[in-house]
Each structure stands twice: as C-alpha cells, then as structure tokens.
Length: 313
Image 1 (cartoon, rainbow, N blue to C red):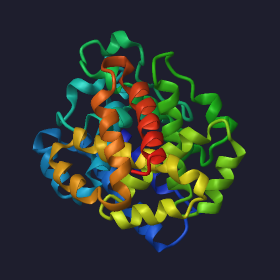
Image 2 (tube, one colour):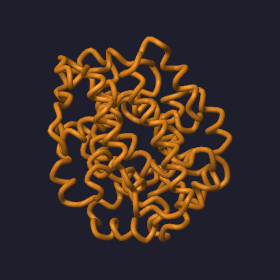
Image 3 (cartoon, one colour):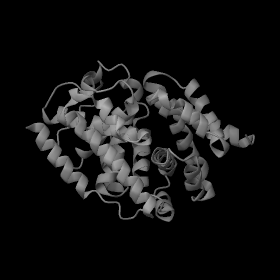
Image 4 (cartoon, rainbow, N blue to C red):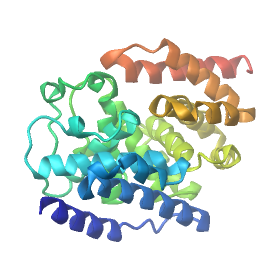
C-alpha cells in the first residue's frame, strides 16, 4: 500500500515539473530522456526489486543510466522514510556500483522533505555506521538536497539558501552548492544569459555554482564531447575555466561509479577536454581519503587546473 501511494505521489509530482526557461528543442529532448530514466529508476524498487534492476537499467540508454540509479536511490529513500524504518536505506540497494548517484538520490529525497511535509533520512553519522563509504561520499547527499531544492522551488535564491544547511562535516556545504549549480542547468538549459544573470546576482556562490553547472553540462551531454565544449564556450570567458573544473571532475569520477565507462571517457577526453581531464585525474590520485576526500578533491582540481593553464598545457 505504501509503495502504491508513494508511486502515485511521485507521478503527480513529476507531471508538474516544468522548465519553461530552457532554450531549444535539444534541451527539451534531453530533459525528456533524463526524466524518463529517472522516473524508471524510482519505480524499480517500488514495483518488484527481485525481478532484476540491472535488466531494467539495460532498457535505459547507456548515457542516461546515472539518472536511472539516482532515481532508484530516491525510491529506496522514499520507501525507507514512509515506512519509518530505522537506520538508512543503503542496505536495500540494488547494485554495488553508481555509489555517488545513490547518495545523490538519497539527498534528493531529503530535499523534497525540506519543501513538503515528508519524513526524511537521518544525516546522523551513527545511522550510517554500517555503510563504509558514507564518510567519503556523504557530501553527495548535500548535493542531492541542493539540486532538489532548486528544482522544486524553481529558482536559486534566499529560499534555497535558508533550507540548504546540513551537517557541519567536511565538504557538505560545498557539495550542496554544487548541487544547486547542477539544478540551475536544468532550469535554464542552454539559456546562457539567464544563467549568467543568476551567477552575477550571487557572486559569493558563483564559483561553486559554476563548478556544479560544469558537472551537469557533462552528465546531460555525455554522448558528445563536441556539445560539452560548445556549451562551455557560450559562457563568458571568465566563467569557462571554472566550468571546465566541473567537466573534468565529472569525467574523472564517472568511471569510479561505473568502471565500464573508463574506455569511453578516455576516448572522449581529447582536444579541449584533455587538459581538464588530466588535471582532475591528478587531483583524484592525490585526494585524501574518508571524510576529507570531497573538499581535498575539489581543492586539488582548482590547483591543478590553475597550474596547467598557467604553463599552457
């Protein structure tokens, strides 16, 4: 019964999601594909998790599967909370890969709970003590919260910032703003003037929002390196280098979530994408472990990107 009610609520919510300030049919087509993958993921644990979630994922285009597993995690989180279960939903996960997307999906549910009267996952580390990679990947929950808030409220403004608070743990605040930047891409996909208007309105957060935008630009256009670069180049010159940090970081981390992508990523990370990819690979190799991983990874990306640009690599 709970699963049916949850599915009905999700269906109603998704039917109301609109992005009227996107530009172009390509934006609309991209969003339709992603929303379809995300929705299919949500329903997978609700309907019959024993019938093969990997088979369900295989029905999703390869470059949209991250969104499928993010949706699956949201479904797991929703069921866990609506049943008022203890602990966390990760013990019911349907795959052992796409870990970053799982944490993002858990955060997406909690973001909904900051807008609507819904029970949410505890972010107390004790409730996640049985999940070994929680200290490392926990900040992606904050990213999911940030994305969910911006997407649900339909803007990045003081309403979002007031609800964005989270645990005082390394990298969580930064990751929350990265999530907001990712959501801005969905709100204003290919509407560069509108995006730059938001960035200029919040200069104190612009760096992290831009990095988040770079992440989303990459995820949504993974099948085309050319489209990624063209999108980055539509922004003002002052913003492009920061966007490339998000692009390079994403290309580096996607094979961590799904090792099968490594050969493809290595092949597409050529030309203008080579420098950010190589810089971010170096950052990944030298980043700290555990709870310090996220902030150290971002710090090193910034340092290596600056160094490689300075020497003209």
